[in-house]
Image 1: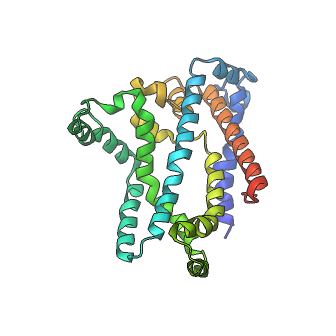
Image 2: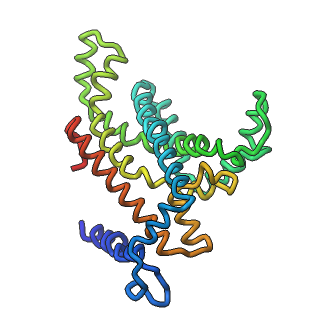
Length: 285
């Protein structure tokens, strides 16, 4: 049963790793990877000294931190709220409605957001109705992060709550019965039974989220950003895409940037796992 999985990872994940060597070379398509001239850490140096380094690093870190602060807890809160609903029909209705955005194509979601936030868009009309100014919201750099995070919550909150609902279903009901006998209310049960019961799942998913902090989804960024919002929207992944495939085809330089990004993610994953293991004895390994 493991053979297909092993073959997949060997071919599509571990096999291409040899190509990372072009980060240390001046890659030339005609010469190939091994015959291209060696330049050492020159591409890393160029990236660290470039005008864009601090901008893309700041945007990547800030968007990732906002996702940890707002997007990560959202499915947990929804799962806890759904767990308190006694009417199954209403619970299933809320779950179905909240799951649906996850299955919408990201390109379609990007188009919807662009249309709704246009100068004559649906959301813009609501803002004007409440006394706001009519403007294209995506044309302003200060709005991008809020739009990116909030739309991500809308799209993934329902789907992300599934694993927490599964964890909640594994809590022994006798604990709630015993707490009721002792006179505990809903909030006391939530704090002393529900949250500790799902805490291992929360910690594991948090560690995995920290390990992807530098991987802000560039597909959605590319669909939503424009030259006016580069100052707050341009992240490492979109920068790599623009430099590598957007016209300049700087393969070696962008490989170096991507390798730097992967090393930071690896360090964050190891650190988060180590700290978690020391604090609460819950970790990935």
